[in-house]
Length: 193
Image (cartoon, rainbow, N blue to C red; front, side):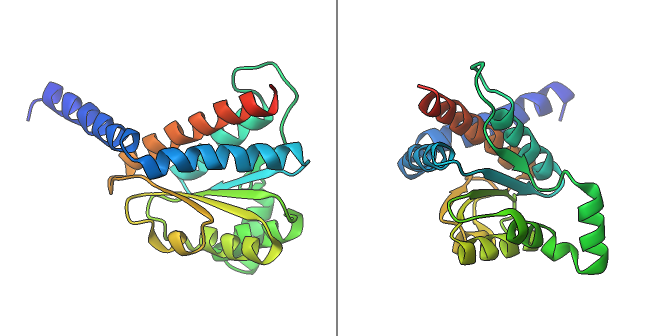
């Protein structure tokens, strides 16, 4: 296959996944619901925490920055943070306990009832996110999962699940950013009407 054909094939695959999202009434309605849930949490003085691994950690940090910095409006910062940004904490807990509990322990320490944790995992089977979501349930923290097609084990521990209709990691991650940007834009509009 020629390079140009590969390029157009990849772009076509990305568009196809997004068209499937556009036609999925359940996901579209879930976006609206999650915008309300996140907006209500911010208005009540709660925070939104993000977590992921690898590229999904970068996406988690990106989306947290959209809330704590700004999206479109010059406005007050919203309390949002990606849980993996403290490397001393991450390496200490991974070394002393297990990488599987890096997010669960931190959430247990800083999360409070009414907060939200948003976890990104293309497989939906990231143990450290699942364990964090289990702690969240115990503490009354809302869980929002962004996964790939199957939802993996996260479908059982997510209050709101966005399972992108793909099993291809780059296509899933592209859609996670799309969904995240839509949510950030609409939350910003709602909180700062």
